[in-house]
Amino acid sequence: MLKISSHLVIPDTEIELHAIRAQGAGGQNVNKVSTAIHLRFDINASSLPNIYKEKLGELKDRRVSGDGVIIIKAQRYRSQEKNREDALARLHALIKTAAVTAKKRTATKPTRSSIKKRIEGKTQRGQLKALRGKVGE
Image (cartoon, rainbow, N blue to C red; front, side, top):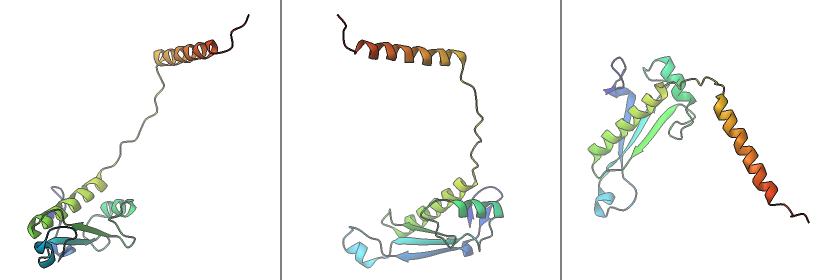
């Protein structure tokens, strides 16, 4: 079971884990042993609340396919068990980030002193540029 929060748990039956051969350098170990983990999690068929499903579906993330399936390939470590833990941790982090709602920005007025500083800077810059002109006789 993957525990997302105190009230949200994903059962192991909803997460597909397959061992595959890892890419890249590694010598004979990489050619013989399937250490990489390919994780698949179907958002729509899961027991997640609808709010989580909607937010995960709206994510602009390459790990979320058009069918609503999260695909994570973990091959960072040389052992299968560490890669399994890494894949589950990445799934956990992805679901946690989808749950966070961004704080709405409230528009504020610039302070009187900041407006004054801005205008003074503009006049100084204008005077500097005026000095670059041709010198009259």
